[in-house]
Length: 345
Ligand SMILES: NC(=O)C1=CN([C@@H]2O[C@H](COP(=O)(O)OP(=O)(O)OC[C@H]3O[C@@H](n4cnc5c(N)ncnc54)[C@H](OP(=O)(O)O)[C@@H]3O)[C@@H](O)[C@H]2O)C=CC1
Ligand SMILES: CC(=O)N[C@@H](CCC(=O)OP(=O)(O)O)C(=O)O
Image (tube, rainbow, N blue to C red):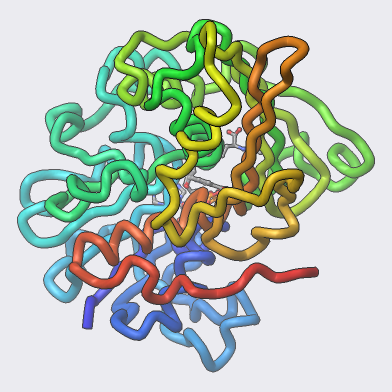
């Protein structure tokens, strides 16, 4: 059994970790922590866990509880994990951080996009960027995993085959993204109230969203070039789901056949589904599951390729991928506990 602790267990990412881990055959949830609800039963916070997880939340002073766990998940706001991680923690447990604290290798880039000082930059180089399909071998050996962001997971997996094969002009890359409101977390914010979001769609973070440098860095590794791109997210009145549509010029002479072949890179990947020709990704087809659906279309008129992806932000975009990483780190089949089919409705 893998004994697990979850910090930030009462947020949206945290409760998705609980949903999958509470039925994972190789996991025992040893503790769940919360500042707001410490000493309250988890099933009083989320009534759907009545009889499933009735244990009381512990406080956030987690160093007290490390002796009884093998891995700690941090589903906490930016900066929290970086403050709590130290050599003592990493000697005792593996850490999987759902926040952005260890995703960006250049600390100045992190600090300028996130507007906070990094509390433990000495661990950034060691941390493995946990995009399982791309970095699986490094994840196996990691003691600290930076779980990728939701928009970056969907964007990178949709674009990676063509970036890696060198088929697109990376300078022409534009990503248009849409997310449901759970992406913003459970905390009360006026801009996320029902009346503010319902029956409307808006762009936000235009030319300034913090996921831009994360996507640029990873696609830079894939294409072996310095990447600068436009990334524009939109808020959509739905609970879950991310849809991305990306555009880039194909390099001179690149054929549709080469594009098709590049996506064969996913032929053995269970969680990345390259759709049949003519089909397009839809968020409802991946809802509550760890799948990412990707597709592409070459437009011969403009010689651009349109790359599309859909994913559940809370599953493959957060908790599901974090558990996939845990499975890899502990030598399990990475699908363990994650085989739920998408909810059709
Ligand atoms: N929502 C999403 O779709 C995705 C989220 N993420 C990332 O996952 C992390 C969690 O996001 P999400 O679940 O949406 O956020 P929520 O706001 O829903 O939850 C955050 C949790 O962290 C706890 N928390 C807040 N401040 C502190 C603190 N200083 N110390 C310890 N715990 C704290 C809160 O609980 P309490 O106050 O009780 O302690 C709460 O349970 C974030 O870094 C986010 O960027 C990543 C991918 C997708
Ligand atoms: C709709 C919405 O607000 N989405 C969040 C992104 C999701 C998130 O939590 O960020 P990480 O994936 O980096 O952890 C945002 O735009 O900030």
